[in-house]
Image (cartoon, rainbow, N blue to C red; front, side):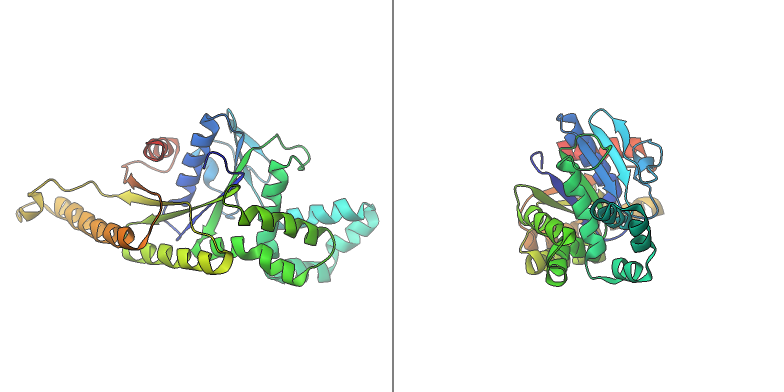
Length: 288
């Protein structure tokens, strides 16, 4: 991951994607790479993981070599219009046009392309006012949207064949198709539905963009049960719950081991609230 320009972190909702994205950002920043975590979830919560102020669309410096930005895809498309039209009253008319609004909201893959395009422009140093960035980590939406994000260049290229959007689409398609430049991280819990979605996501990626995920993070694992402890029927309820949850974890870890080739990291469940302390523990697990 240390050589990539773009890393997309995806998985089922609620599996800890934002915490893993924050931890990856801290790891890459610690290597000296100028790293930006790009959040596109409207709830904007990555800043809480890093004890940083909300981005509100701006690039916020979090720590040495580490930045955060919350992005509304529409702002990228609007900026493309401003760059190309360059005449204020015409730009205003285009941006206020109902046709433009319908197009930007409804064109398949366009909003996803805007996210990837913005990431590319960041690492190319083409975003006015932004610092030099070496790698962008995209905290992607839930599983299906993550696949849509990576499939977007192909969808848009089938509809838009000329102009600035077409040119950007071609550049983004080259970025996404290159395993040396773009990495994909899938986060899951070792539970039946998240694991099923992770396996389906892997198949969808291979079908849609001919890519395999570069890393699987099995997050929130209950501690292993001491040998012989699970047979002690007199244990209190909380302890029995722990044993049962770990048993379910082990079943799903075995399913992953049998069906998922490639790197996999297991991250324990930490008794910590969402925030920098939790991110630090996940960072240590990933780094080890």
